[in-house]
Image 1 (tube, rainbow, N blue to C red):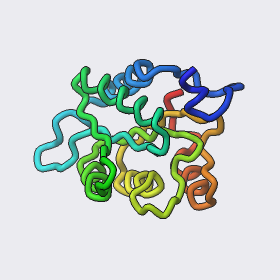
Image 2: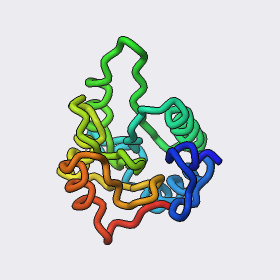
Image 3: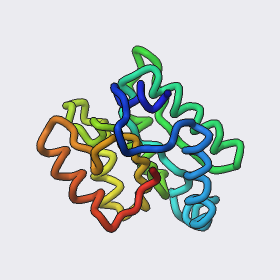
Length: 170
């Protein structure tokens, strides 16, 4: 039920994950398999957490991802998700989150990677993670993969980064 509203329409095929518990469990499995990648940053390294990268343009999406974050934290996974209140800038929290990230969970919705003009958006987060060779864990929550945002720049980058050889959580 949640995925249906999350994706703005009924699912004909595609994602099978239906709860924040299932997503956090899948992410935890990836984290456990590469625990040395995320746990307690390397000596002298600023990299220390898993960054959740997503378009927070819907209230139900924000609530869902906060639940995923809480579930991962209960399993002692160091997680970071930008949380700015109305009137606050999300520029520095986004930059700090990226700077300290060892891995990035890219929450692939239909509009993931879109160039919105905000400058602190999933397009730039994905580019930063790719250029810094961070481990990217795509969470497929869209029917078409890789995601095809409305702009061509986002489509090109998503097609390049989310290649056929990069496995995703579905």
